[in-house]
Image: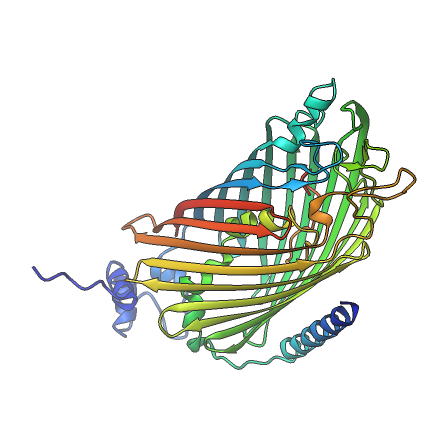
Length: 407
Length: 80
């Protein structure tokens, strides 16, 4: 039997209108007894009142990170040499987006991380006290809850406010965000201004594992973003972000090999200014594909300068399958106090491999299948894989899979 | 590298200024009835917040350069 062609959107709209006599009269261009001349047509009168709330998106995503490598900050190795940075993270995320009326959008996001870390575990081997990293050593669960409320204040303006809380065994954070978004030039351009504040309150540790009370950190970020349509298939976006960090900027358990053959604690300045600017180009491709190119520049007052280039390609096949590929290259200079062997008299020092000079490359791929359902929106299933490698031989394999419903 | 960095900063500031001018100047180059491609899921997939979060975590916890993407840069996690 020959398959029936899928109904087009206009056919579906006519079918929907046909179920409502008033809408049908309107669709046929006939005068309706319910409307006198001069009446203003109201969509609610014609099609019936819209539901007060409507779910737009429900999705979950599971991601597994498998990391191997060596860094001088880790005590999982010889005292004067680099230690293991083996790390496994299982991350679960859930997202729920709901629209309330025409002007309110609610978003709830819950990420949970299950972390095991050899670098932290190793502290137990060298020192008597267990749980040197806060019980953050052998296994740690980090959870966060974020809520955002978007308010459409006018046809061109949206305000978004959000708050969240992050919890780990030794660590508590409060998170706030405020965003202003305005459409310009008949929606050809969008201006976004945002501010974020994170307050971290956490245990400080001595290198031997004993606690040294509580300490804190404040992170304030301001961002501006601009996007502009250049053609019916091209969009360009600019972004700039400034971040000011104050307080204890070390995790307090990183160590540095010292010239006397022992290890000393990492010591970092209590202030950091960070600047990042980027430009991105999004291009629709006529064979049902998309290309995204992005360059990002970063500079801070700890003397880190970084450049990142990223390319993403997506291609739809057979209507319901979308394949993606991505590549990213990153290069950075190290912070001014990075060393793998510190004199005891130094005021600032770190051997954290993340803060050293390095290049990194990341290559990834993904596949997504979408399955429209009759009553419950579109079901989507996604699988992705990324391989990340740094010039200091740190490697991370990332596997991720997601599923959900878009309405 | 400092010369390159200065050049990159100026280039980006110039581009940002150009973008600001274009945006605030009201550059309406694409009428509403010709924006169908921007509603295509193959373009909208880049908006997936959970995918963006897992990628950001991969990079910001292993490199010293975070920020500029409208999200908080550092803080909120002991691994940063």
